[in-house]
Each structure stands twice: as structure tokens, then as C-alpha cells.
Image (cartoon, rainbow, N blue to C red; front, side, top):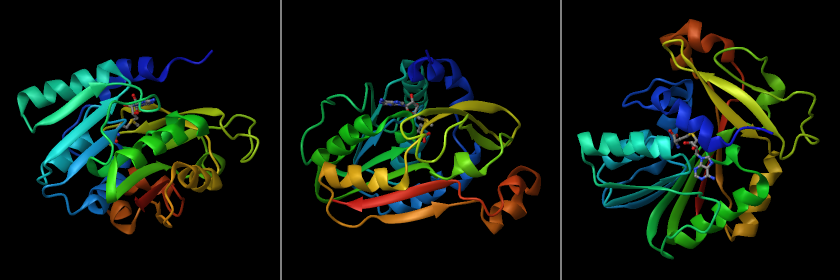
Length: 251
Ligand SMILES: C[S@@+](CC[C@H](N)C(=O)[O-])C[C@H]1O[C@@H](n2cnc3c(N)ncnc32)[C@H](O)[C@@H]1O
């Protein structure tokens, strides 16, 4: 049986803790999330699968009024709380399963985010999180999330700086199957990541079932020309490949 996600993250929490871009996806995904989340001044934010708080801290620095952040790994939340104790930003952290019934009030947040959470969940669990996000958002509030690109495990070799091992699974036969992977930091350290594979249509089907009725904005994220110029050795193997997808929805 595969190890629990919380155990993996409890163990890797020290390698995730950061206050500046370190991991590949700190360059190729999170800056695009930060931009999509603007404007943030005075906004309330629910961060689902917050990890050690890198994203929450970055958003809080832009003037949010409240951030409630939740993660299933006690080790990651401990790191987040250590950081909050060192440099308080008023972020509330809780240990919890975002796919279970979370204690969040209805219609109370301007923005809900889930940055690389859904790759740890199957479609049933993802639907539960999407329902929570929909319920927690005010009318007109936004839901922003990123996931690994569904094609990535089928396009990339099992090499640095990012891969998932799809084994013998195909794009459709691999639905809801767990692919283990690794993602690298620019300093050469690699950390474990997981992808419970979903097709592109799964995201749209679950969003509709969760109550989101407006078309999402969808951005397929990649290593840009700027990334390739910044560090050709690190980003070069990813040129012209789809890496992540950013979804932006309005309630
Ligand atoms: C790739 S990390 C991303 C963390 C953070 N969002 C970021 O971008 O830095 C995924 C996080 O999801 C958390 N996670 C996985 N399953 C979860 C669940 N059911 N409920 C809450 N958090 C979960 C993991 O513990 C891990 O911290």
C-alpha cells in the first residue's frame, strides 16, 4: 500500500520551507497564481492545501484582510506556524483534510485557492473540495487552482527537473491512479510529489457538479523564454512542454 500523503509531507517539510523561489514550480507556476489572485488588498482568502505557507505568506504581504490556511500534514503546518511566529502576518493555520467537512462559514471568502492540492486527491475527493470552495465563497468571489498538466506524465521522461512515473497506465486507463514523481529545486535538491491522474474533462465535470456555472479561464503553464534565459541548464529540458494548468473561476 502506498504511504499516506501526510507522512510524506511531514518528512519532507524541511525541504519545502522557503521564503523565496526555490522549486521549479516557484518559477513556472506560483508567480502566475500570485498575479491571478490580484487585487488582494482587503480580501479574505481560504488556502486549501497550504503546505508550509509560502503562497499564503506571499498573498498576505499584498494586504489581505484575512487568510485561513489548511493542510493535512501536521509537519507542514508546524513549519508554517514557526514562520508565522518569527514574522507574524496574521495567517490562521489549521491541520485538516480539505476533502472532509471543513469548518468554514458559508459565503465568507473573496478568494479560495488550491495550489497543487488536487494532484493528491481522486475525483471524488476533488469534488468535495470544489464544493467547499463554492460554499465558502461570497457571490462574485473567485476560485483559483493549479494542477500538473494532465499530459505531463505522458510526455516527459523520468528525468529532472520534474516528472511523474505513470508506469503502464495510459491517459484514460490511468484516471484516478496514483503516479509518484519528483520535482527539483534549483539548488539540486529534489522533493517527492504525487499525481492522482485526471483527464482535462474531469476538472470541468467536477467544477460543474460543484456548482460553478461560469466558464473558467484556463492557462497552460510552461517554462517561458525568461526562464530559459535565466537558467538554461535547469529549465532547458522542459522547453516547449506543458507543465501545469491554472484554473480561475468566478462564483
Ligand atoms: C505540492 S504541496 C503544495 C503546498 C502549497 N499549496 C504550495 O503551493 O506551496 C501539496 C500540499 O497538499 C497537502 N495535502 C494533500 N492532501 C491534502 C488534503 N486532503 N487536505 C489538505 N491538504 C492536503 C500536502 O500535505 C501538501 O502540503
